[in-house]
Image 1 (cartoon, protein in one colour):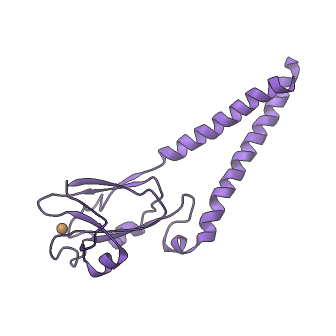
Image 2 (cartoon, protein in one colour; image 1 turned 180 degrees about the vertical axis):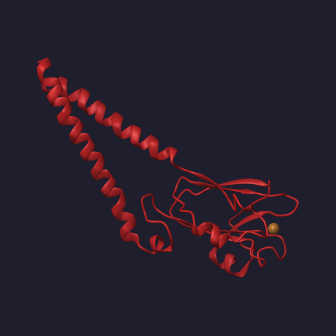
Image 3 (spheres, protein in one colour; image 1 turned 45 degrees about the vertical axis):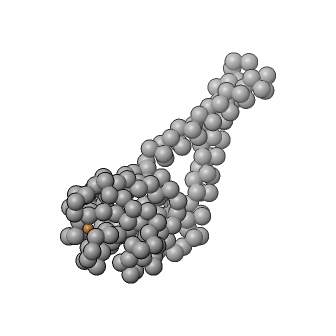
Length: 175
Ligand SMILES: [Cu+2]
C-alpha cells in the first residue's frame, strides 16, 4: 500500500525537478559581443558592454565581424594587459565565432590585428555562478555564489514536500 502511493509521488517529484532543470538550461543565453549598439569592432566600449550583462556557465558569446578586418584571440590576463597574442589560448577568424563559457572564471579576448587591441578591441568576461548577484562584487564574493544554489535546492525540497502532502490527501480516498 505504502509503495503504491510512494512510487507515483517520487516519480512526480523527480519529473518536477527535471522540468526545473530544463527551464534553467533554457535560460542559458548567447550574447553577441557588442550588440545591439555595436559588434566586434573598434568603436564599441567593451568594458561598458560587459557591465550591463551577467555571464553564467552555459552561456555563449558570439563574435561577429568581418574576417578581413579583425580576428579573435583568447589570451591570458598577461596577454590581455599587454595586448599581446603571443601566448594565446586559442584563435578564431571565421567572422562568426561562438565561444562557450563553460565554467566560472574570467576569460580574456582581443583582436590580434596590429593596433586594434591598443585601440580598445579587447574584452574581459567574468563568468559567475548562476544565482550570484551581477556586477564586479559577485566575482569577488565566493560566499554569495555558494549560498544561492543551496537556497534554491531548499525551495525544490519545499515544492516536493508540498506535492507529497497534496498527493497523500488525494490518494487516501483511493484506498
Ligand atoms: Cu580588429
